[in-house]
Amino acid sequence: MKGLSYESYEILKLYDDLPENLSYTNNSGAEYSTKKSTPTFFYIDKSTKISTLTSMSTNVHEICHGLTFKYFYREMGVNYLPHEFEDITSYFYLSKDKKITSIFTSKVFPSKELESKIPLNLRTFRFKTYIQGDSSTQVAGIIGLLDEFNAYYHGAKYMFDMLPVYKSIYPKNYLNEWVMKLQSEMTAFYEFDYWIKEYIMLAKEQHSQLYNTMIKDGSAFYIYKNIYNNYKDLISKYTSKVNIEKNSTSYNYSSEFWEEDYFRLSRQLSDKKYTLINKMLKK
Image (cartoon, rainbow, N blue to C red; front, side, top):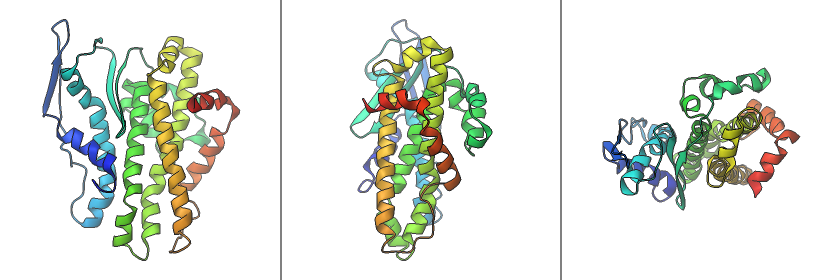
């Protein structure tokens, strides 16, 4: 990992280096505290070399979540940043060169409010978990959605980087095995991009104060833009790599993405109603 996927390695290292108990005291003398309850390698199946390789993607994803909501305490212990208890505090590891300590000051709405905006034909298998379910996307709203978007990106990035290992383990069938593990995580880009766009539009229509907070410099939209461009660049590299590799090895898939979800979501995301948001993502 350190040699092939340094950002995945650094996510685990930053989390591993945190103490089990984290706390800081604000300017008024109030103490904020939390615990690092999950071990760094908790989500890995170590029974075989292959299970370790494949389950590490889930591990990177989940530890990325831990880093998002735990590492903030370390940052605050070093340099206190004024905020209120109800503010949503987070630390986004975007890349080895860009990490953002975020304090979101506006009241968010839960992702459940998007349910009526998502037609039945666009409800993917993750819809139940992240739009209807009881996850951070409810309590933390847009920040929860961005946290999931980022975690799926890093899980996919790890697996993409591991192609040389797949070649060594599956010399005759590496591309099929690699794509099989990556299809769903690459397709997650389209799910979260769609939901986040719908969240932004609903905020603009019904929660103007939240919308204004989201799009200000350095806030939620800035984080979204960075994750979006990181993920989109990864997808471009992935499709290019598949097209090159399939010319010299066996390949059985008709699409390198989760086929049904990919086609219906990519069509939806081409809708003109997202034009303004897409322009903002390119600035």
